[in-house]
Image (cartoon, rainbow, N blue to C red; front, side, top):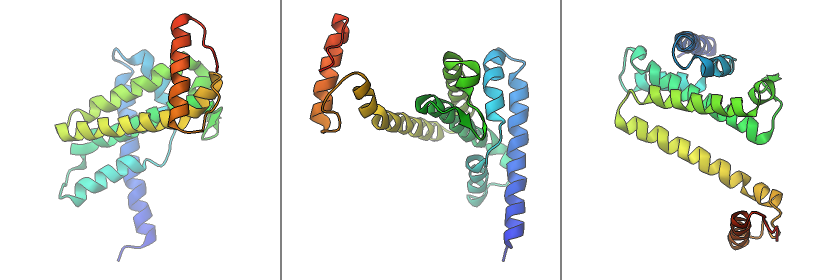
Length: 194
């Protein structure tokens, strides 16, 4: 039986392997055409964290009979990079000032730059994940689509309230009527806010 101490040591070892791979990836990206975007995104990507997603990717690979985890390191890093992109965007949506005790990206470099950095991380994650089987790419795309849909559903009532819609929270019909009024008002140049 594996002791808790040796289990934790193995997780730490795997986390360090992922961390080194991410550091190398960031350094390589700093010399390419994406260097300006990586200068924005690199610090947040390397700001630490538990790295559960990439560690789980390597464990799943081995559980399925794989031996050389370097064969899935791009996919493991993709999971962490996409996760970091969602954190950058989530901090913007939530107007968070701190993440892990440090200023969030949008508070330190500005909103447009943080959005670009988050988008850049999404693109990098898809690029790394895209080096694998098409089924993997499809699953990553589905997961990111679900993340976006969930964020939109979570934020829709607040957005509608900001737009002056009454009846928010009274169900989908009230939301549709309000969205229609806002669309019509925006087309005319002035939302009616009813």
